[in-house]
Length: 541
Ligand SMILES: Cc1cc2nc3c(=O)[nH]c(=O)nc-3n(C[C@H](O)[C@H](O)[C@H](O)COP(=O)(O)OP(=O)(O)OC[C@H]3O[C@@H](n4cnc5c(N)ncnc54)[C@H](O)[C@@H]3O)c2cc1C
Image (tube, rainbow, N blue to C red; front, side, top):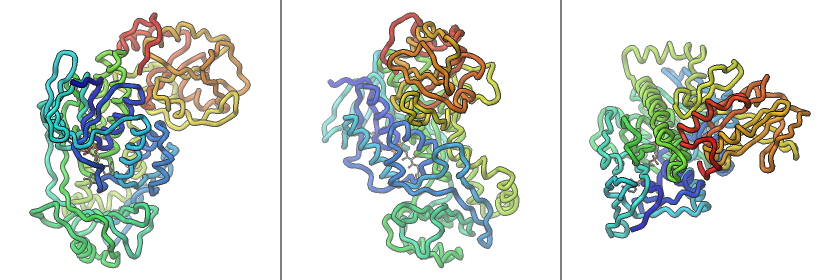
């Protein structure tokens, strides 16, 4: 019977990203997929800024941007085509202040290619049927090429979509409900075209009709079907054209359909993301309305959060507390996404009553008073952070300009001390390890800090100097950077003292402190990685 450290079930976007995160850290793993080949149709379209930042860290951003279509935001129109909300993402604090519209099949192809580079094989036509927890791992049963087989793994990750076998066999419920309405989608050519720099949402008498510009002059139309439909999956171009006609949008003529389908939507989530050695990620743990394009992005966020933690656990270089933090951090995020998408769906689908009044009259005002900006920030997922998590060390002495511990670090530029090359701070995380950014002052003694950090496995060290500053203690292999205007130091460190900031591989500020104070850090790392602070360097995360 074969044995691996982790078995990932499902090669959708979530499973592939998780597998890549494990493979990057040399974890032995199997990736099972019940389909025989990649999916042909694209469900998700929208890649949000936070996901683009993740792809940047993985070195995949150029490929993503090359194939995607950038939109500034979404325009929402009310009665008589009056512009109600202009949700513009252009001022978001990121290198990617836009929504990237890219068929999910393309995002999946980029991840598949990445897996090939990492020499991870997707086992197509392989369906997990059940599993049994044992003392030191999981015994999984699956069917491959018509034959039942068994394999042993240390951990099992269910990334197997809304109908997850892993979730069901773990006995975890999936509470929630279905929305009443049915929906249509069509990928078509459109004449005349709408402004392709935006997504356009028309609130119509029959329900919302949304137009998404895709690469190569394709438009996706998503529309609510009036009434209830017996077979939600059936749909035709004629039905879409007729719906447009009936809602005074008949001048927009769809033709050359690439895909037309009907679908129903649900909102459900599990109350747990972990049960012993079994984890759930992506649609296996949460499904919701596609309003706001959050589904795939949230699943990718799950995988990015879990990957480095599971790798450390698989190699025996972390404690249960680090693994527990996956659920503690992601459940509130998932809850927030369900609440946001539900509110958006109800507001946009309301046909009568106070919700219509709010949409037509209150929303335009609120939008100008900052609601559109706040909504854009939430949809971008840039605000996702874990300040309450046990996997970050609270910082009681934070000054106003500093990024709070538990937040994403955001785009900041550094200059290489030797070459003068400029780079974004996020690039320092591309190796997938913890990163210690040190801001020295005078003769900073770092021996104790190095000793304490050793328990967290290999930590990459980067020294960030002021212009003209030198330092004696820099070791061979450490990065040395110049922070000319002090932006990085003011945001992450302490401008007045020799200080440090510890960054997690998923781009979150994990802890900060002064170089001379290491007791709290020692205790914190001991809790997550189980070392003593006196030991030699390990190999994870
Ligand atoms: C119409 C529509 C539009 C959407 N638009 C957006 C959008 O714009 N933006 C966005 O972020 N999200 C969107 N979504 C949601 C998005 O498509 C999903 O959230 C995303 O596909 C989830 O990825 P996943 O990898 O978790 O699951 P899936 O993509 O469902 O992948 C799960 C995989 O597991 C495999 N599998 C299942 N059971 C087993 C088993 N027992 N053994 C082995 N393999 C198994 C399946 O074959 C599948 O390949 C949309 C969804 C719909 C329906």
